[in-house]
Length: 401
Image 1 (cartoon, rainbow, N blue to C red):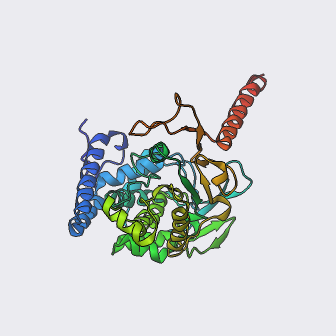
Image 2 (image 1 turned 90 degrees about the vertical axis):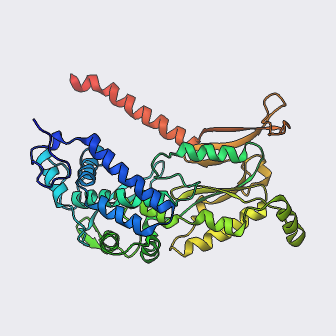
Image 3 (image 1 turned 120 degrees about the vertical axis):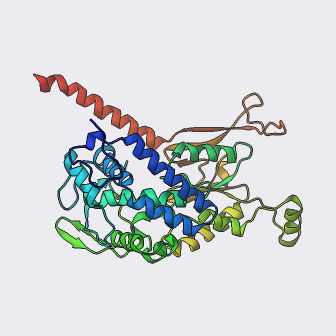
C-alpha cells in the first residue's frame, strides 16, 4: 500500500496510522532550525517567511493534533464543548480544519489543589480545536524566541529541566558563600498584562489576532461566564511560552544595573562609589527565581529593581514566599535560617573540615561543603504518595474477593 503524501490536503481520511511521522518531524524540525537561525542573526523578514511556511504546513498540523489528542497528559480533559477523545478519522479532519480565524471559544475552569496546601490553582482548559491550533502556533514561535531567551531561564523550554537550574546554582555558590533572594511571583499566569505581552511579541497580522483572542477568550466556571482582561490561561498549550516571553528581560535588567566589568573598570567604580561588585547571578525557572551575590546591599537593590520591572507587566513579588537568606551563616539570614528551597531541593552550605571542605580554583580550603538534598516539603509529598499507592495495593485483594 502506497503511503499518502504528507503535504497533500487530499490525505485519505482512513490514513492516520499510515502517516510517516518521522518524515513529518524532520520537515518541521528543519523549518524550525531555519527560523532559529534567522532570529539569531536578526533577519526578521526571513524569520516571518519561514514561520508562515511552517504555519501552513500539513506536517505541523498533524503533529499538533497528535500532541494534544495522543501525547499530552491532559489529552482526555474536555473543554467547554465536552470533546475529550477523537477517532483517527476525526483527528485527520481536525488537522484539515485548523486555521487562524482570530476567534476562540471560552476555556473551562478547573480547580486543582496546590501540593501541601489547601489553596487551589485555577486551570483554564481550552477546547480541543484551540489546543491543536495553539500547538501549531507554538511550533512556529518557539524557535524564534529560543534564539533570544536569556541563558539562565530554564522553565518550560525544550532541552532544559529543573536540574539544569539546580546545577547552575551549585556552580554559582560552590566556591563562595553568598546571599540569596529566594523570590516567587504572585499569581504570575493570572495577572500578566495583555497589552505589554502583545507588544513584546512584536508580531502582526493573523497570529497576533489569534493570540489576542486566546488571551481574551474568557472562562466558564460552573456555568457562569467571566471575561479575562489579564493573564494567560493555565492549561493551554501555548501558555508556558507566553509566560516566558512576558518574563523575558528580567536578567538583562539586572545586568544593565550591574554590568560586567574588567578588573580595571571595577577598581575605578570602587573609587567612585565605594562599592566593589560582580554582576549578580539570577537563575529563573518559570515564575520562581533566585538572585545570588556575596554583597547583601546588592541583593536588596536587585529586589527593588525586580519589583519595579515586574510592575511594568502587571506582576508583583509574593511577600510570604520571598525571603533574603544566606547559604552558609544563619545569623546573616532575615529569618535566622540558612539555606533555601528551590524546585523541590534544599540548598545549603555546612561547616566542614579540611578533608571534606570545598576547595576553590586556587586550592584554598573554604571551610564549608555545599549540599543539595530533597526539601522537607518534597520528601513529605513523596512519602504521602507512596503511602497512598501502597494503601490502594493493600485494598486490591479485598476488592477482588
